[in-house]
Length: 367
Picture (cartoon, rainbow, N blue to C red):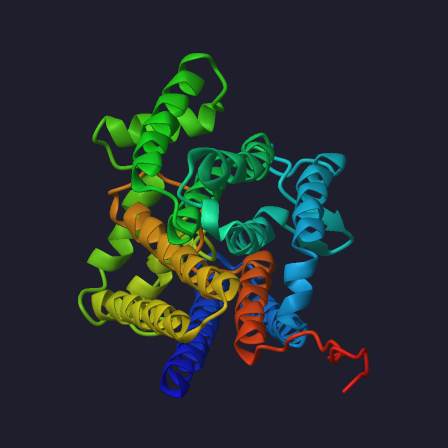
């Protein structure tokens, strides 16, 4: 297990460094090309520092505490997801809790909280996970509370990702495969019905129209040109200029920055690091005996893989444009802190800090 942990920590460090370099390059390009003061690099460093603090806090909480209060943490997630509607909307959406300069996106934390809740649920209901009612329907209803609250923010892509992660967690826990096949068709049908009856917003419909018409969305076209213009090895750090015209280059389209600076091999390198990270996490899970920790670790690795797969799919034009960032590379403190909190929970489970209880003999004497 030691070798896998070294790979995990090294992967995190590589992603932190690549993300920081990319933000620095974007800052320089914006200042030189557009004459705009940009501080993405500073924000990214602050977000990583805050994420590491959260990581150490989460790691030092014994896992049995997470297990004991999983229902409370689930309820906390509902409160946070509902609280966003008490704050002013930003760009037409209620996704953030804002306090002065501090903003937090609860939907990022919700993905960690729901897999924790479901992992503990599986452990408590291990013998009935192959049944439809308690092994699938009931936990999915719990998950749908999160999914619906995220959907009405509105945030369709994150809502669907949260549902996908919930389904995968239950699959890891022993739920039958046919339930997931049925769920897939129900989700597709729900999206079709939502679009027909006006439950989807105009920008969401626009993204879907671009995709199904075979056209490339404007932001994807610009993002791909950064890679085409830079070739296999890239233009070099802070040397490119096209990335400044890519919308959300610091978050959803961070690959445009990496592609222009490092070229195709840069994107390939990042993809390999993610694969190493996910594989090592899965491997670590195989050593874990506690069912809740094992399933949580598998699900956490799946979250990272889904983020990467969706982001790469959007960047290449194979998927509709979504707001799914790249873990630890894209700017955004909520994502970084939530994912590092998840890794802290995994390490907490690995230390196996069980709650100490006094042992009594048959005569009632404490030993």
